[in-house]
Amino acid sequence: MKVEEIFKELHQCPEVGFELHKTSEIVRRELEKLGIPYSAFALTGIVGKIDAGKPTTILLRADMDALPIKEKTGLLYASTNGNMHACGHDAHTAMLLGAASELMKQREKLDYNILLVFQPFEEGMQGAKKMVEEGATQGENIIATFALHVAHEREVGVVELKQGVVTPMGANFQIEVKGQGGHAGYVLAHQSPVYLAAKIINKIESLSDPKLNRMHVTHVDFGQFDYPGVVASRCFIEGAMRLFTQEETLTQLSQIEKIIKQEIKGYDLETRFTYQLKDTPNVINCSGIEKIIQQISTKLGLSIDVIASKTEFMRDDFSWFSAKNREPSYMLYLGCAPKGKKDNAGHTSGFVVDLSMLQVGVNIFINFVNML
Image 1: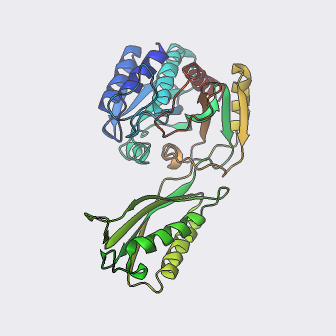
Image 2 (image 1 turned 180 degrees about the vertical axis):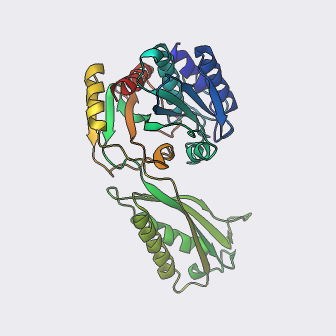
Image 3 (image 1 turned 180 degrees about the horizontal axis):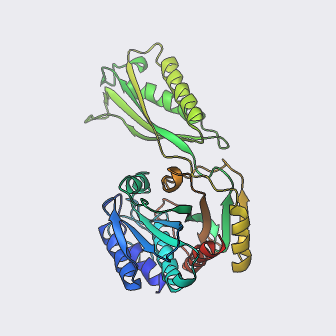
C-alpha cells in the first residue's frame, strides 16, 4: 500500500460533516484490498476489524472530515471543490490505512484484536458520539484507545506529548441585542444595538486568558438593512469558550451574563443571552503514555516535546470511544510542517503536510500496538 498516494487522493476530495461519501468509499476500497471486514456507522463512518482471535482489543482512530475552506496551497494535488483538508485528517486516515496494511500482515503474531475506526464529523464534535451510540464499539473488550493528530506548526520528527488532561470542554453562547433602529442622523448611542454589542464584545474578549481559557466571539450579525444611513434594529453575537472543567465553564458563562446586565444600563434596548454546554468529555492521556511514547520515539529516532496539562485548547471528540467504560486512552500529536516553514497554521487555506511524516505516523501506530 502506497500511503502517499492514498493521502493525495483523499486530499483532492475533501468532504465535510457526515457527508464523506467519496472519502468513505476510498477507505472501504482499501480495507477490502487488505481483506479486512468492516461495518458502517454514522452514515459514512467505517469500523474495520483485524481479528487476531484474542480476547481483548485495541481501538485505533482516524478522523476523516475536512473544512469548508478554499485551498490556496498551490499543490499539484490541491482540492478544487471548495473544501479543504486544513487540519490534517486526510493524513490521519492515510496513516491508519497504512498501519492496517502492516498489522494485517502481523495478524498471527498480534497480542490483541485491532479495531480500526474511521470517523466523520470530528470538526463538529458529533461524529464519535454518534458512532458509539450506533454500536461501533459494542461487543468489543477494548483495553485501550489510541489516536494520532498532526501538530500543525511542528516540524516532521517532533512529537508532542501532553500529560493528563489533553483537550478542553466548553460551551457556545448567543447574545441578541434589540432596539428600534432607525435613521443614523437621529438614533443616539443608547438606542443602537450595534454600539452596545461592540461594548459587550470587548468585555467578553477581555475574559480570555492565554493560560486558563479561550473566550472568543466567533460571529456577529449586524442585522438586515439596505443603506449605511440606517441603524440596524438588531445585533446578534455568537461565541465559543474552551475551558477544562464544567465548573470553570459555568463560572465564565455567569461572568458574561453579568457583563451584559452591567453594560445595558442606560440603554433603551433589550438583550437575550443563551448558551449550550458541550457534553464531549475531556480527552485524558493514561499515565503510562510517557513510557510507551519514549520507547517508540527512541526506536524511531523522534524528538519528544512534553507539554504540561491544560496549556493548549484544541478540542477533539476522540474521548467518546473510551468514555463508557473508561478504557485507558492515548493521544499523540505528530509534527507535520515542512522544515523551515514557520506559518503552517491549521484551519487556514495555506496549511500543508510534509509527506515524509506519513510513514512516521504509520510506524507509531504499529509500534504502539506492539509495545502496549
